[in-house]
Length: 253
Image (cartoon, rainbow, N blue to C red; front, side, top):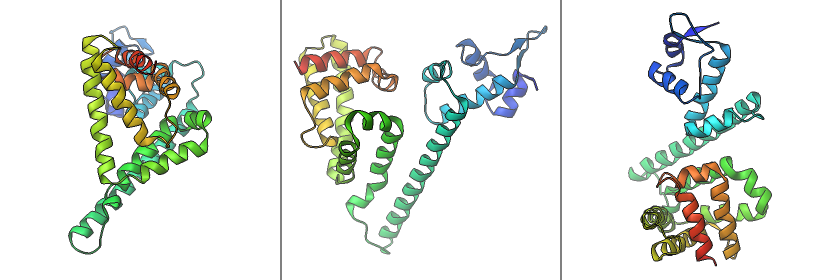
């Protein structure tokens, strides 16, 4: 079955403006252009739009989606299985947060006692689940199950003060890194401060004794090699990931 852009927008819930933008960036092009200049979409494009929406729902950027869908090894069935796993994980996370909110309400009403650690269990578990879903296979292959599980155990054991400190550190790293990037010197004082903060943040999550200068450099290389990390740090400023890598190399020299 074929659809005009208007009809495809109607059945998908995606605006015609967005569909035209997807065509403009080469993410979703029509199967053909009719004599009246209407964009016509076929079954292949409908299925492709479904994949795009799945990835968007999971928070993947358009640039990353384009790379994924244009990968010659892209497997639609495997991608759908991955989407399902991610959605089931999100369902589990939401259920944990619902349970956390329910306990909090009960605590406020005097129906139960909720420890400070319990107040943050849902958030910490979500971070662990997100990390496992995004990087689990890679980090387990590289560092082994025991080391990864030890790091997760450390996160679960964080109290309220530790958790808040980790969040503040993350924000401070980004602010300092942005300022250092503007100066343009990866060996400068601000860049070294950003790296020191980054080290402090890593040590909050890594197993004791895991940190070394070599491990820090390897991680920095991974940031540049992995589009997901690059997208995160380049939100500060385009090219910021490579700057951080260079700064860490200087810091760990």
